[in-house]
Image (cartoon, rainbow, N blue to C red; front, side, top):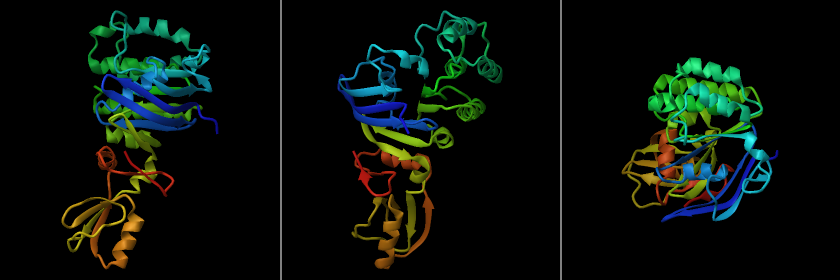
Length: 298
């Protein structure tokens, strides 16, 4: 299957911050979450994809077109929701729609109207006079309704209340089902990631830890409670331990070691996604690659 987005050896330095190298491919029908600590480079990566910043090294192709090339035909196939849109404040929602909709040949006016009604967005008010939550809802309606194959969302649930977050998840799931689409979104709220993402691309302070298939990732990390302290023995897959507890990202190898060395455990529990992300973002912690064989780290 051809990739809609292909990032190869991408690097960008801003003052003392260094992003990359980033290698990432996005295929149709997938939702990928960019996950990382604050300042890890998630927003910078989205801006690089949109050619709003220039890379120092590497290549970005969208629908097989270099984003920094003379052919800009890729632009009407990708919609980008920035955290803070520039220039929106003086305009009403109706005016913004009139400016944006003609630029996108597949603009979905029915979807836009549905989102406006669902989120109770006042289109007659100036953007700058709206609350941050309503601004976010309007921004999303103006972005998703562009109905492009590839959708980029930067912290899409910021400033939104819980019912609105749930409604947005439903809207995006329905939008994915209605056509050949793909989504990349930057986020840090595990509940939203769990519901939406197929893949997690994890960034730690500008370094790409890896891209992980979500369901396999959540089945990989296991917390064990032991009958006796482990002492100084080294356990396969171990990434954390306390006196009678151990966390492993290779549970099969860990349990085989327990069996062969008569280590008794009383209980085990799969880690929640937010706990797994916490481990992946810790310096020196390794993440389990989704092919089930190799280990990657910082």
